Image (cartoon, rainbow, N blue to C red; front, side, top):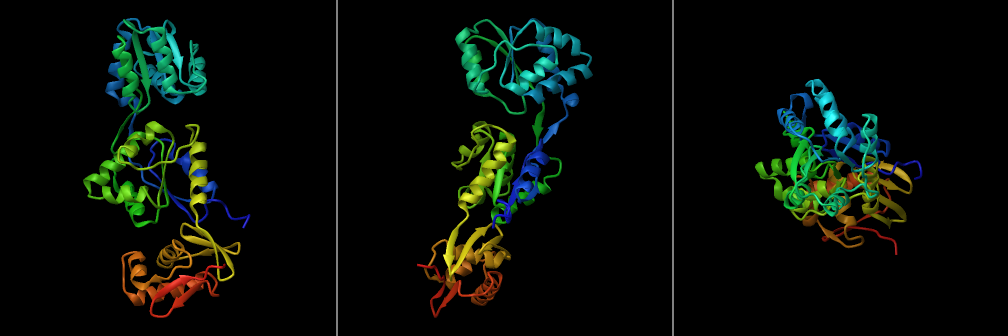
Length: 367
């Protein structure tokens, strides 16, 4: 079984607009099948009148401190200003301010622009940046906070409550996708069980998916799926916010990185994969497949649904009525018998699934 990739058999849905291909490639490398359904789209920087207005406001008078939260966002801001003919003015204003960088990537972006940071927290967290600012005293100061699509209300409000004037520099604006078809189909896949994990890289994407589910009457189903069989993974606590508000449990990497998110998805799916011995065989369930004695076995949706129902209580007799409810779209007793036959064939025959006369079926779990 060593040659079977960890995510083989699993389908992962990606709602991201930015870096979706990068996340998808990492998951495919681990063996997953990937479906894309962007829940948001990014308004191009040069077309964003709000960013232009915020930049003009910043340039209207000296600024005491500038908080830079992302490298790509900071570079994009400078490039947009250059396109508006404000590049030199912005660099001049930034060079006279105290620059605070959230982490090494944004520190690198500052230095590449000929600027230097006055402070960067070792934790790479916005919370530590805020603590540093408040501890140094901000009353009467004019502070710009560079955002990247996601608002930071707690950060901005804390500075304002402490007496600072805050200019929010929203680099990129995220709005609903022009074509909602792909994300709508992604939502259907989560509800019908054909998607096994849903990683999120931004709070707006999570909020947009939730809004779509609410508008179309599918929110209870989404919450149920993400609270049970489907892994909801978030790159960090801010991204998890919209899901946490609905009581949806999420898994998160220790470091807010795309690579770490892909690893967390992989480790969680593998850890949740049922493993058992039945009919003298070793069986591991993998999304829409099973590994039997180390051999890869494709299993169709209906037989797989029954295998999962049987594996939920290994050795217990599961009635035909229960198995009918487990079938995608339901059915009748004959449909259960047909699916059980196909399941036995998919698992390579043998006595893995036993018929218990007049009662139902069970996995022949080894003692």
